Length: 591
Image (cartoon, rainbow, N blue to C red; front, top):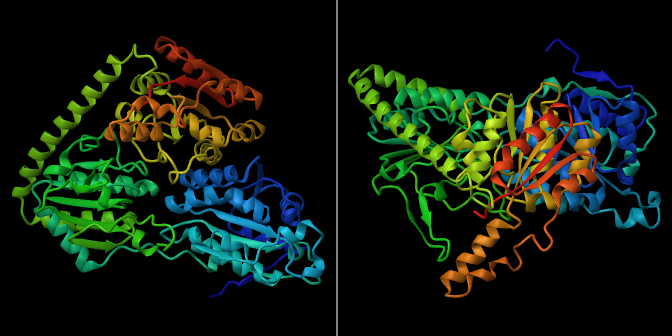
């Protein structure tokens, strides 16, 4: 190794070293709500680092800071940093850190703490803002945490944290910097490691024997079905999955954690019942495979198989490599015939190559696959036609149909360069994906980030940051209950001039809980009309357009007449194209 392994830093204070390391990794932004325990670090970012790479993104709540970083990575493929004020800021941020953990998204979370040296603590505040150790508060839902005990330990801690966050399965990490060490004056120059000499390991491709067995099972199957969930976290894997599906004429059902397969492709059968007749299931990055091959009774909680008893199941994923005993995000163990620990971004191309080699040895399969493709294309086209007809048939519904809202929004944005940063117009039906031309990777980044409310707008800001200056229309399909958790994110978008098209599907309810309350009342023979109690967001309904205007953005609505939806959306789009956040509040049906 001929090159120098270190570089001399110009840092004057301990916190300057942290900035040096962030610059070395190309960190572009750091989101923060200010706090005294990282005043040294904030000064270093602004004055030593010049507020450039990283640049400060100011927020009004720490949960928003982490959500921004969450969305940013999903769009950019590289992490951004977060600064949190000791215990109180960490507790505020913990919900969003949990979301990142469940969604397997790397976020570089940095905190501060009052000095470990008690002679350096200011009364009273440094004492109650000092945790022993602060990482204990979030250890069960971060991949790694550290609290370096000296300035000379800062570089190693950041390198290990960055690597841990970025190695699959990815996830958030937390590094806490002692306030006294941040502010420590350096007496001599420090040598910093060259981060390029500590690369992220190459992705795992999968055991050779197991991959060959998987290829043989796929090629021999009469009715294979591919279940794809988080495959789209790597955009290249989407194109690879298209090749695999086309090689086998195999239908793909996208389970939705990421956009994993083009919705315009004839082999996209998302929303179909094909799983029931499959003789082979290939599950790729499925977060809940058990749920994907089972039917669950919402009242009795009993499950029964969705697939045939004789259907074989192949699973390719890395999720088994990252579990915690406290948070059971790993779901119930499903029975599978073949389980392969591999990164789908490398496993899918290899599997496709193996399948092609087998097909070449039996040319008769090509005619079988052609016939299967024709049949599947017809089913795909039929579903699309029926969905469009249904959306149009609901054009007069009041409250407004989410299918009609999806139809009208598509008419407004279909000629734009658009991205859905967060949300869905229905978790179960996903009308936007049924009606819009989702024809390439990175057009959608999942409906939510881990099932915790408060994610949507913050994540959308992160996606917009990742696309800053490229002219894309960033769309946030925003539910009302989620936005109420973090309304001040509107201020961050306005303050930093981050244009976002916020389209609200506002049913004035915590809809999921409303449905649960209504169904359990029916099941017990009780009055289902009481479901509004504790679940309605009404009397009075929040005026979201006014809330947006109060933060300096543009607000339109509430829109309650379905004939007025398209015009309101057009006005919102015009505002976004001028560089501002626009919120269009559309009052929609309970789903």
